[in-house]
Amino acid sequence: MKVLDSELLKGYARMAMDGFNQGWHERNGGNLSYRLKAEEVDLLKDDFDFSGDWQEIGWQKNDESAFPGLAGEFFMVSGSGKYFRNIELDPAANVCIIQLNEEGNRFKKVWGLVNGGRPTSELPTHLANLEVLKNRDENIRVVYHCHPTNTVALTYVLPLDERVFTREIYEMATECPIVFPEGIGIVPWMLCGGKLIGDATSEIMKTKDVAVWAHHGAFCCGYDFDLTFGLMHTVEKAAEILVKVRSMTDTKVNTITPEQFRELNAPFGVNINEKFLYERHTFKIGEMPQD
Ligand code: 2HA
Ligand code: ZN
Image (tube, rainbow, N blue to C red; front, side):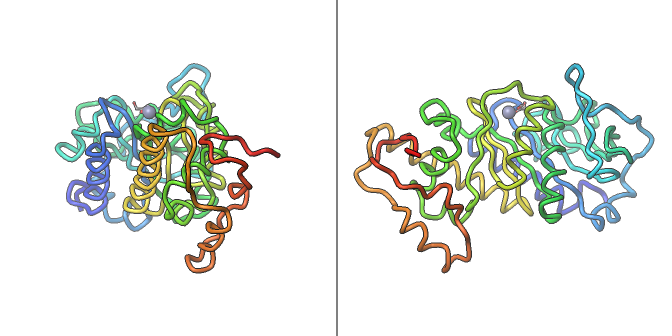
């Protein structure tokens, strides 16, 4: 089957357009990767071209990266410098499929980017995350990076502390702790596009589905495009509510209590991490826990 006719590419392009329509992908902002299933490789491999060269994964100086846990696997990834708003219109020019070599330290483009180009500048972070996630749960295949406005805005006014950030987001919408019971991890400002930020992000992905990059954007993961987009949408919706609340006041009058959060566990079959259910002393937004 042609990649262009596949459900996989349609799902990928739809997610890219959904993210663009949310306003999370100005210019060439954001990137999306997907680790192909064996049956998807079988279905599409006649459309792959294996004649290209093996290329280095890292593009920054002294940035040798290896992902042996992903050796030989295939990934659909967005192109460096490409615009999400063009993906649905012309996927073959803006997206590619790459394969990693047997050492997991070089990639080969086997499909797409027909007008030239490289995979996303954030390839080291995508692969670092996908490797950790495969280890955590082999069904996690999607890693998504975007620039969600309200989530980024909050990184200027909330302490860059995962407990405070997660708790403030949790209090903005009851569904949040059900959708991401392990909370949100925070990466302080770091140079993007390299191995260091990839390592910091994948450390978070060992246990969590969401990592916020301060003053930049967010990464999230999931089994499929619906779940991954839905996760980012849920975080960003709660962030938007918090921006509205914080614009009215720095102190809430009412909120959801730790006891109420715990009531969600049994009926929704989740186990909300107790780390985020600390006792608050005031309802002041951004208050640090006093332990
Ligand atoms: O240009 O978002 O982080 C793509 C990015 C880099
Ligand atoms: Zn970015």
